[in-house]
Image (cartoon, rainbow, N blue to C red; front, side, top):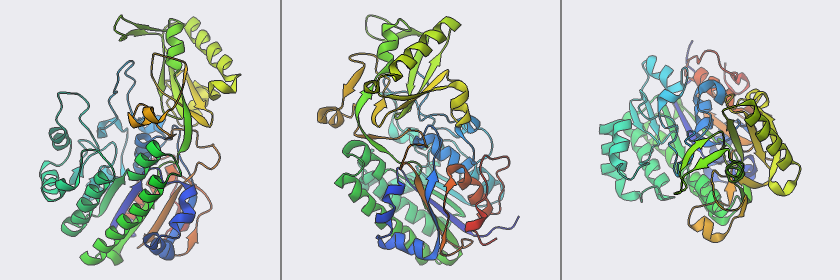
Length: 433
């Protein structure tokens, strides 16, 4: 299969929403993409709509239950900081970067989720030191490309302030620009999280979120300029996309508090989980409820959830069966999935009241947030966007609707690759095929 482009640059602006679209059309660098390419401002995301499953879907074209990354973090009951799906090994089947590498292409990824220990030429994976005895630099080097990461840190490490934003994205930007100029990768995956961070801690439409959008336009402009300066712009394709939207919330639902009261979660005198028969695993705007043990336990949990659903003040909009959740692409090992009402989201806390009202002090301490994702893709005004421009992309083409699972197959087609048996399709209407 012949490729349609020489260089594919995929830029993920985490938490970019269809509701941002009117603003994007006013920004100068996004305008350049709109003027020369195709776009869709009604991209349906996956369930649960959280970052790691979304980014695994983008590079595989599959739903979470098929690619295996069914949440951001693992089911580790009682852990104050569960481990994330950081590593490539957690994705089942081929990825876009695997196939590009097999085809002899140069690949690069900057903070792209689920790429730790992936076979990528220039890899700075998104992974952080999650235990007190871990060292951030050592963890990053061990899971990515050591020489490349050391070079980027030597050049631009002074910009970064740990994981704080916007400094982290500014560091990623400088590294991306340098990578384009020095390596000219055939596939470059870049993940920016500034907007997502501001929305979590300040609210969806906050001034901080709007400022992050403006910074993202500047970052896009820098990447476009780097392609032009390097002389590969005319042979490149740029894709700017979001992975999910977000919704403001003010109440945190703690299902595990009730499960513990019903003796379905056991803790010792220090509050540490020592055993469980049912456990709520948060996906923020939704949650998996895992059940083990007996049919009696299953029925007890089912009755509890459906009773809670009857009262809107409990924050549960819908209770999905295992089969219903699987039909939406979510983990088919969970007994139930619960969807939060607008204004609510789920946490895994075990103590206190069943529902907490989020306060400024909670958010400052990063115990809670002001906006979340993870909600059902069927929620109103919850779509994300994709804008593509450059070689292999039709100009002035509007795609009325598409799905996140369509992105991987479409990107593969641009590079002359095939991801095999996907859940999505090639969006030929936006390509010059």
